[in-house]
Length: 206
Image 1 (cartoon, one colour):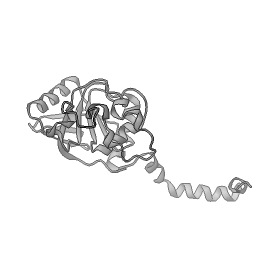
Image 2 (spheres, one colour; image 1 turned 45 degrees about the vertical axis):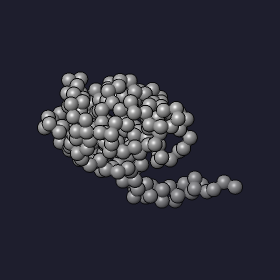
Image 3 (cartoon, one colour; image 1 turned 135 degrees about the vertical axis):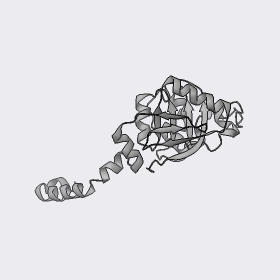
């Protein structure tokens, strides 16, 4: 997992509430087990027309939002099924920060395991961020994870809370596997001892 770094990026606006994981990555694209390649199908039902052309009415097809790494969206983002493909698609598309008033619990947890920062802000703060984007589409926000702040193009600042352990893992680029590998020496030592004390556990069956 890539470490999360401070950045200034275009903030895309998708003012929709209760965006579920089946819209984030529709079920027909869940046939792969690797994490890559899902970004082209992000919000597929909304991004594309029946003939495969881009839907000009969909928010992320707005040319002003091209290259955005920050998504500002409505309440309860990521609800629905627990598929981890949803954050895979978001990360593969190029987004690494989502700002909302609330997230579905499983989706929220999965974001941290995939290098995505889900930021929870108040209703008032979200309205202000959305208003600034509407007034100046293509505006950039700066995300400072160590300081836990969002700074808008107009110079407004919003603070956010985040669990200290999750914050540190994002900054270091550590997912569950990465955390385990930090203790690889202890794991190797344990396995060596066990092979001596319980050799039958390490004997391949015929």
